[in-house]
Amino acid sequence: MGVVLVTARGGGGSDEESPTATVAATATEESSLDAARRVEADNDPSLPGDYIDLPAIYGGQYGGEPNTAAHVQAAIDYAVQGLPPAGGPHWGSGACGDDPSEAPPLCGPAPWGVYRAPWRAETLVHNMEHAGVVIWYNTSDPGVIDELENFALAQLNDDTLLVLAPYPDMDEETVAITVWSRRDMFPANELDTARLQEFIDVLYCRFDPEGFC
Image: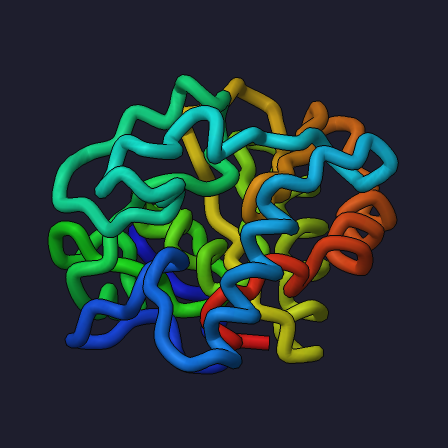
């Protein structure tokens, strides 16, 4: 069942397609885009997690520009960057609603919140474009799931833009946390919420081309 345990703030989808990270408008927005591009290209090994070089993977494929955040209307094979994805082309054709199992085709982003049913990765990549954090898991261990849910609920109570959801397409008994262009993953039986917290403390809202933070 696609039961939502809780959803936080709105802004997880609309009937209008939101701009991608490559749309330039006012000078302020252009400055935000420039900052986002610098973050996207920052492969500093001292940062938490692993760097995913999205410009090298997707740059030039969509419109000639180094457009790593194109809105598309097709399934995306994210395996080229490893799973779960940490950015790239994604869906954005409308609002998703609160139940992943009843979401309309090509919708994105998902409402911020905690879920027991998986979203399509193409939907959640849009959440990362909106400066959010996604925690993904593929485990049958109820203790790990409970700990993840408690951690995520605390983050949402602090107004963190975050989604927690299962992701059966990645390795079994694995947990991962992603923001745009960074990913950390580890065995589920090595879950350390302090590690998740450090990832969020350092990387949350660094990539924010549309000013969601």
